[in-house]
Length: 282
Image (tube, rainbow, N blue to C red; front, side, top):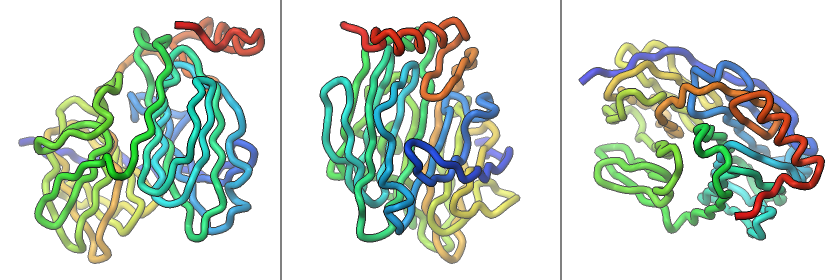
């Protein structure tokens, strides 16, 4: 079986988003071919509520899916579909914007280190204007595959015969939270042809047989094609998110929270928003 090699390491940049939330943008608004079908990955977290409580007030999305994974903390969600509630530690909010949704995400003060991720996944051209959907995946709904010295929390996708709860996602990605014991190495089987990204957020480790570069918290390993990923944890252990998906290889027209295939479609989306016709009826 062909083991993937390390293509590059993305280290991201600190940015201010929403109404003034400090976060690290690991990738986004750059070379989408490198991460296709994923568009953007934000890592937010702080012990200081002033860094995040301003939140992300009402804003639109079209043409994408947003996946919010709370490692620790709470975020209050409200949207134009009438959904509402609080995403707590270990939960995932999977929102398919499709033809258009308007929502707000407001982090709540947390006694500890609030931390989490938001991933944007692109929708193929044929599904850009699909019906919007919202899923609140509870921590108790998550399933795990356990190996020797490691475990894989499966949020979306299937591994070792274990199917994650988010199984009706349009692009059929894999989204795993992987924990590896100190010093343990193992081969993680992946689908050939997928783009595979590994984002470390605890400990450190390697994702290729050559151990080309140790990947630290807040870094993303982008891997070449192959059938397995050679995972190896440092003496501190390793915890990372694995994101894998088949590239769409479609044109990307992207401005702010809306991602379409052409500039004309982008213009229509923003015109719809200004005219009050952004939310479609099904």
